[in-house]
Image (cartoon, rainbow, N blue to C red; front, side, top):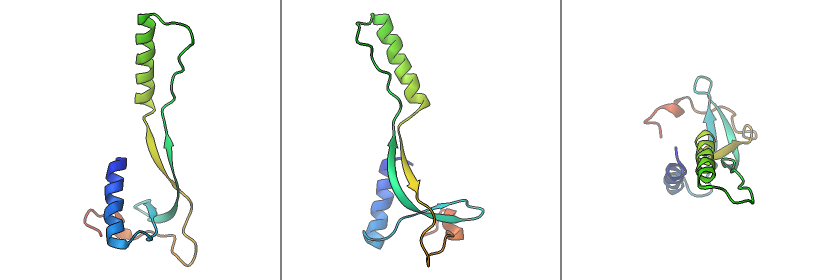
Amino acid sequence: MTINDLIDALTDARYELGGDAHVRIGHQPSWPLCEVVDAVRVLAAEEVEMPPEELSPEEEAERAEQMLDDQRRNPRVCWIVAGGHPPPPESPYAPEGLWDRDWR
C-alpha cells in the first residue's frame, strides 16, 4: 500500500465514519489483535555524503550508482507506529473477519 492508497482509504473512512473516529491497527489474522496508532514516521534511505573535493566523472558516476544501490536496499518508507492495545473498556482483539476482502 502506498501513501496515496492509504490517504484514499482514510478519506473514504472519514466520509463514512466522520473525522473524529478512532483508527486502529489489526494484526495477527490467526489470533486477531488490535492496537492504537501512536505515530506516523518516515524512514529515508541513508544519503551518501559528497566529499568537499572535486570528483572525476568516473568517481561521480560511481558515487551516483552507490546512492541508487543504497536507495534500492533502503527505500523510503512511511511507518504507522502501533502504540499498544486500546485502553479499557475497549477490547484488545480485532474482528475475526477483518482480513476478508469484502468486510466493511
